[in-house]
Length: 367
Image 1 (cartoon, helix red, strand yellow):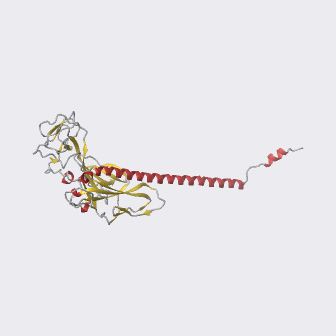
Image 2 (cartoon, rainbow, N blue to C red; image 1 turned 135 degrees about the vertical axis):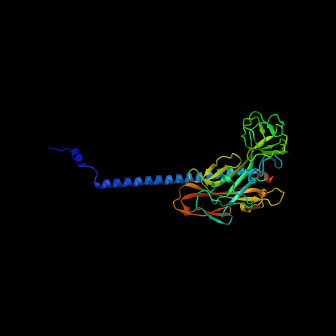
Image 3 (cartoon, one colour; image 1 turned 45 degrees about the horizontal axis):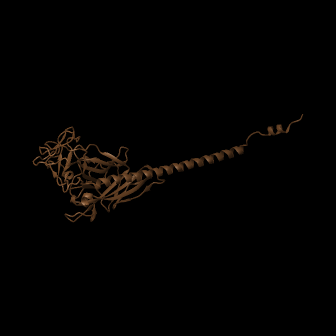
């Protein structure tokens, strides 16, 4: 019987040998490991880039927010001088620290954070009582238990223009200003009214309801008003501002991270507002113009502990230590960061950190 050559070839093909199979498996493993390594490297690069971008965005927002607020501190429109003050200074709710219109900013220095000192962050839990300033003022009650130790506190006093149209002025009696329709200004709001010619202004607490077509300064309220003197007579060109006293500090964020907070301190201020997460430490210095009665740039920068007259403050120097939310570094690092002369030691971990600083002039104090 004859056997064809094609039958012989087909019969000799019995599959891959064990050696060939092992080589194929090894090549597959090497290829898979390469793909996994590439993916892990790309993922780490992405996470690092994203964390650094988030840090930079946090820096940009924090500085731009406070730059604007500090620059406009003590601003009441075109008013020349200070408004006549009608708030009841004898009331228990009257806080001269927050209601002095001659003070644009005021602050409190955290213990052991003076320039030249080193502060080691032992906790990120808010609380304690380690804050003071050169004028001997207590930290506002609204901030009690909310500030993380080692962080300075800054309060900015200013005026925010109210969107209201005046109508029918001057209108008797002298403690009432007419508005076009409902004023929509809540009862208890502290206001500063500035005359159209910028020559006069009054500060008082509004005592009638938001749906009234007038702005009334009456008795009652907290701290209420001293009604012994009439308001200036205003025509319809006058401007109305809401008096604001706002604290900025580092507290505990909703996600457990340290964060920059904003807290309104005037009547009905409400709950603290978390502005940006990842702010681990804030240090503040104050620029003083030591020539009495003159305006001009700061001649020295000191901590809040060395300011005994807040009317002399003409600028503010801020420094932030920002940290990433994720532990993105390859190794545990322990570093010390210089925040305007104060050494801050956050401890050893794998978080990325950035230091940001800015010096802001208070426009009303420099011009």
